Length: 494
Image (cartoon, rainbow, N blue to C red):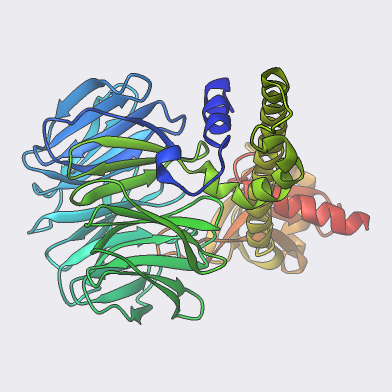
């Protein structure tokens, strides 16, 4: 964490309360046009903002000045996302998707989608592999994000689709629309289910980072929290206006909700309660975005301003509250018999203690978040497993290149084997075992099998030598394979 971010975080937490006025870091002057969406760079140095004129703007968050104004769209831009490779994607009224370099502002790629009406929303998968568009034409289109090559079409809702989200592990495309429903559609097959509970159009949805819950916002002046596995609503939060923006925090505990009446609400997901609410603009809030890992929230509203809030107050609140109480005496008002110098010295002591508590809580929050990520990775890696496969057929041996064609699982491979081992293998191939790792496939083409065989190794029946077959994937290329192999080694050791 940079000194600048740490200072801002420290300064904001000096007076601990749930007031938005005390977590406001900066705000811009009114911009020329109504803003439609906002995202922040991962280091919270740049805000990217789109508007109704089809422009993409870069704003320096230190000076709050516009550094770039780019125009490639032929109509308004409705939605903007950023991926893990520092690329931006925009879409809107012209039914185009444009991929931008977030550093230079250069256009990397752009396509005209087959949507026959405007695009209301776009979503990027957590791993940056898929991009989904939600359209007024009742359809959702899914693309490979890198190339913007078409992947899949979905007709989920019976009405125009207002919003779309991709589950963290790419199992589901969730969409909400004017039919009041949230529809889950599998990325793999035709499986689907519906969450039905809103009394108005569903305007925005977002998954918690662990994928256990979905938060939705509606025209019925409510936000609802849904248990995805059990397919049911577990909490409803009333608001002052139509909820058009929901954003789950990266700690899995909090979420921000914004409405068209200009209010922002902070929701504690674990406790299923509103922590605070505050009217911050006159008119509608158009978009909100929480940056990771800095915890800064970007907000654009009907007043054409950009606001930056530091949400770490809420992310770290329980830790901070618990640890700062022992220093309450240092924070007490000036005592009657206390000199000014003594009071100032006590306040300095309190500030030093606050900084120490803040550092402790930030470290603890980071450790918890990393532990959650490791747990999720380990659970997925445990789906990997080793299998033994018989050889189906043997081809003619090439004794010049020492290549023996081998048919395994319906596919031919070339095994590089010395002459002597090849001769004994040919006469004993029905006894030969091919070892492989079955790797689960969660986000690839649904026409491929759910599991994919990788790292095939032929075990010679006489020499017991191991010969690799086909492409070998290294642990450096697949973190889940690395975790799986580490678990196997640990199991054998124990």
